[in-house]
Image (cartoon, rainbow, N blue to C red; front, top):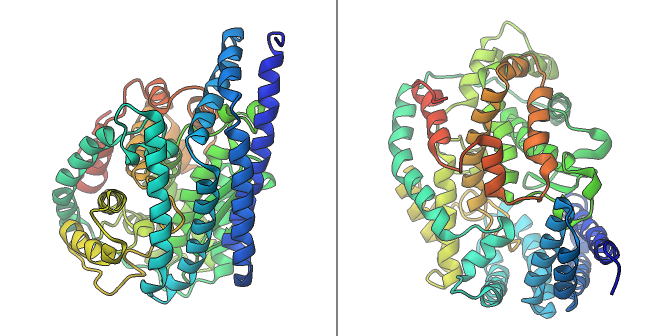
Length: 505
């Protein structure tokens, strides 16, 4: 029997190798979305499938369960114990999945995503149906295999949710989603009826100037360009690793605010990655606790902080300098930019949606993907279901407009079924965290108004980023805010910002 500590160190080395391979996987996926020529798709899908198979075989090694149990009995360090529990969880999920299913789903998802990139611009839903049907079928198999391994009547969709937010279930989601679905339509109507008109600045806005603006604001927020970069892709995302965080955006020469806020959103993700505990790089305990917390970091920065009047008062001169505009033009004033940044509008595109309508975009996707998974909705019927729900929730239709409807997001085509709920939970968590941060840091809004993100970032590093996965997300929220997650802070924030009601403290 290995001495106390030796067993743990051996497991840590094995998972460090897995971490290196996942790093390579992440970089190949980023390159696929940003740099890869279209002709490289087949070989890239095969390479990603091979990497996924290799990682799976290492994670599913049959001795890991016994070794982690034995090591846990030897260890008393809380971080090492948490790392061992995460190793056991990773391995348990891997053992539930046949390797050929893992490689098949990886290959199918990569191929489907590649088709989507071209087909979306062409508004061609027929082009993606076959690939999506294959991805969906394999995802069903994956969900059933994971659910069977858990037992206790676990539903396949819950097993998929657990991949993105450990412990999350539909039973936890449905009350939150139901409340927002009931409350938000009236709030949206009232917000639209009282908002002041705002005239957008006139373009065109050069891509070079937009990119410069994005990088300037990223630096102000605390992004470390020695450990990350900003590029262009079809769909904004944050990928990479803590010491190599890759942000992407897309540019519209007629509307610079879309890209600006996409960059601010993705920077929130990247700051979380760059703030993960350095001592635990490559270990299961050293990663983000879950995607709801990850989305909370992006939405906290984009929605709570960077659409606030103090931030926009700071940012307005930077924006004007970036585009070399007349400072006396009222459309470029901080007040007008704030009106534009907090405008409520029923619109088609999720990533461009305001924070009041945004949750309804997610409820729609949640309802469709659960129906797809249980077989009550066929892939060919997605456009009709999408149009029906858009009209029901937001009063606008998408009939025939696939690129701005059911084809706008990469998630399903890339096999990320079960991810969408993280966005609403992230928005709700962001509001609760921002409320707690303001209580803990009385001058934080003044600091933001001066372009100083350091107090907020330090608080987030201490309470969220630096904790890695040492505790469950629900416990981390209680630790940071003093109470379990609820909708109160989020709805209070919306009523204060959009209806002029006093915010709860």
